[in-house]
Amino acid sequence: MMEAAAVLGRDRPLRILSFGCSSGEECLDAADIFPNAIIKGVELDDKAFEKAATISHDRISIEKSTYEAIFAGGPYDLILGMSVFCRYPLPKGVVNIKDVYKFGLFIDTINLLHDVLKPGGLMCLYNSMYFFDDCPVSMDYVPLVSRKVHAGWMPKYYSEGDVATQVEHYWEGQVYSFVDWVRTASADFVTKKEAVRHVWINPRSKGSRRVDTPFWRKRR
Image 1 (tube, rainbow, N blue to C red):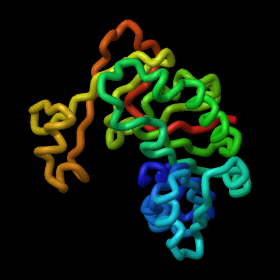
Image 2 (image 1 turned 90 degrees about the vertical axis):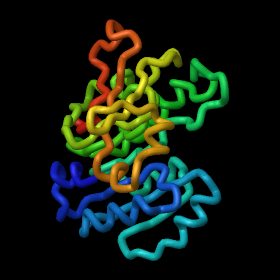
Image 3 (image 1 turned 30 degrees about the horizontal axis):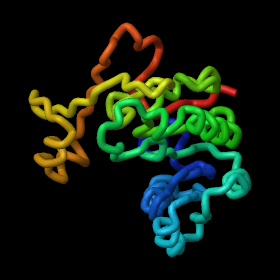
């Protein structure tokens, strides 16, 4: 979120949507980083929502995730979609995800968020299994690339559901699988030294798709 603050200005009276706020920690982080922002968190999962709803903060509101709740708080300057557009872990043996997480559902949700994001606003999509670049509305956005952040550690998939990238984690020149990375990584490594590399299974199919940023700025 610090990267978003550098772009949008941390002291501005922003409106922020935490889409899939889970138990609400993301909303609290946003309130700390943006001291004048109004933050709305929406969550579908009943258990996570119950915990998030206990947050008492004069700039944070938590609601069940509905179209009405999302539109009522907008339009937004910043939308956070952090580890929401994914299914993890996948059922054993699943290679193509089209029946587990349909691309059409991804498109519909992105279109909803697009409609409530202000021109010039930022959409942050971290750990999205599908490419934002494959959404028609991506033509209205510019990627913001930073060496400090990446698009997440989930493999990427094409709109047909086939896997596009494999993910490697590296540290001091050594490459780890995700399982080994979690097993060997200290808390300090996870928070300060995480490095993720997406390896294209078929580099020729890459096209203009990006794996190096979660941030997209709306042009209009």
